Image (cartoon, rainbow, N blue to C red; front, top):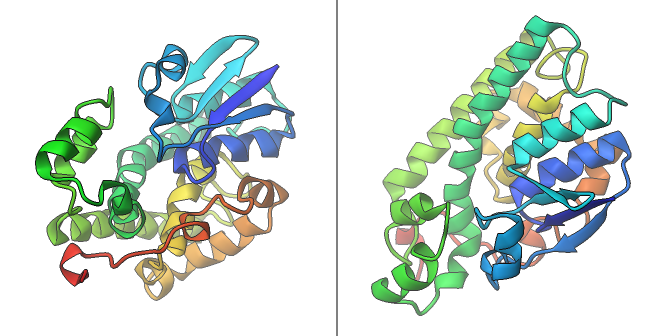
Length: 256
């Protein structure tokens, strides 16, 4: 039996749900409330000592790290394969996956916090912010240290992240133009799955201008993605931050 511990709006959770739905694998779910820090509670840390979501439990055995979970599911359930059969193409797909994890996944967290998640730190002074938000985290501590304060990421940090997301879109546009309709060509792969939450979150945060004019093939890719049944199952009501949060200005200096 598969049990997925996840948060609906978590970008890392979304990619794992996408793979499960692409494979049409049945699973039970336990939703973790990140706002209440349920991912840092002792019972959850026994499953995932990193204190992040998602965690997949397969017959009592926890599997952690979202991209690892995605590959695990692709290996265990060979139907609708999400990695190419050709060894060279498989290596190219994994290179995409590595780039996405290193660049896009990290970059999207910055505008996400500034526009959607700073409400969690409302009323905290610097000492409280460090004690309650930075120090308790087994991982992601560096992200909060980069933020520096409960006021959010600086304009410099935001602009750097937008530049990294723009470069991701440029590479996507180039790959789709050369191969298309997906990043690796005709086959929908884990490269598409892993970059999906970053692109969808950009749309949710009102950042489509990053690709809209310069990289139109990314928009076309996103339209094709949204038409997939697995995508519709992955993004149910409440799985986007704009479904339940009021979005704030991107830059802290623009706040009242």
